[in-house]
Image 1 (cartoon, rainbow, N blue to C red):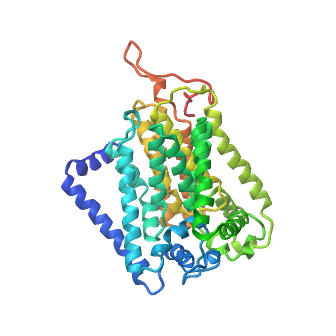
Image 2: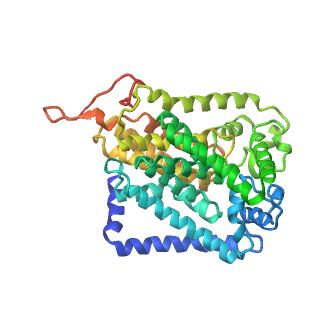
Length: 443
């Protein structure tokens, strides 16, 4: 890790070279993004899906947002709010909308870094840690930017939620969470479990208020109560059919439901690919055994953070770093446990990388915990890169297994407070029974 840190620090010290490097990367990504989304006759960007739904709203055909499709026959699958927000720019030229979306994502990426630097001192990452976490996330960032997806906006909203949570702005925190979930049904939905675990009732009540506002009131004010209600009913049906044995008959099978695309990196998708030799053999047959196994595993993963925190007394003060580590694991849970998801949703792993890097620097060199964090960091980063670049590795779920490894390492990482310096000056590690309180040995 030291050589990597020195390399990053070199560009941080020599700001001119660092700025040139960043600008070169931004320009290098802008080229294929604009070419795919604004220049090719058949626009290869998901942005057109959202804009097509927005156009239906603008033309007073809001009831059709789930039936209209772009030129590649891809359909809108999110709650009505995003289509309503994009309606004003839905008929603008791709030469305007694609660069605008790209710049918005870059601004959100910069905003994520700025907010990370404004966390309280005991959870404030060093600039090199932010840079390295973003380097580790480059495969997902590239996928998100070039495809015209909004997952970096989700990442910024996640940073804003944690920042406002630490600032004790409970109403703002809950409303931001509700907005992020409603906008694109993001992995941040599982942050509700984080705040439940923390017993943050005011935040949960404000999130409920936000759901009422963003799912019902604001969309209904724009397109009418009956229309919004009908659309939400359709949307809920689209979300609930994904694991059924008849999902292959649905028009969204190839777009969303099929677990056989290597870019799908949920536990259900990967285990289905491992259980069935091919999609042809899978179609029309029951996948009940896989559903039971993966549902049980998902329930176990969701239970583990609560078991780990069960020794925490109500109102007990937690370090901001410990809260960041806990905060980072819940959005990943939705990626693991949802029926299907795409690799670009893994942008939220930035906070998991950040938590692991900060925990690592507060744990003595040579300890098993530090070695475990090093191994998990590099294994996860390598698996995400190779799994994104090599389809066969993505097919076998390499990004999922790497992310699960890092997730488990952060979850069971010893609290840095468990390392103490006794009178002799030698670092020792205080451990207790696993899952009994905050100080848990890394086995």
